[in-house]
Length: 61
Image 1 (cartoon, helix red, strand yellow):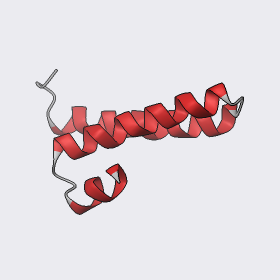
Image 2 (cartoon, helix red, strand yellow):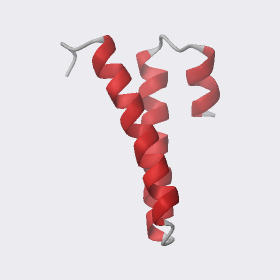
Image 3 (tube, rainbow, N blue to C red):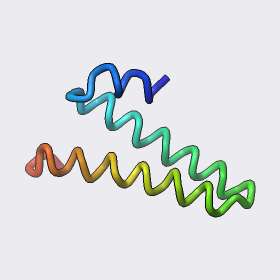
Image 4 (cartoon, rainbow, N blue to C red):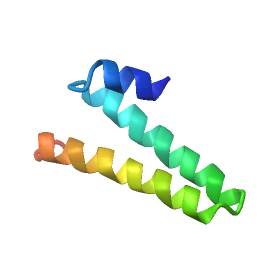
């Protein structure tokens, strides 16, 4: 759901943040399951979202 919302409104910082949080949580689940590569993939997606948000508004902590 978060991915569809983020794709539908790519300029929405809230939708993008929610997508990043979802990716992070999915990474946590994969890590607990012992799927380290899948966890890393989700963490990298979360990081990419965070980097895009920071680049778009560098003064917003």
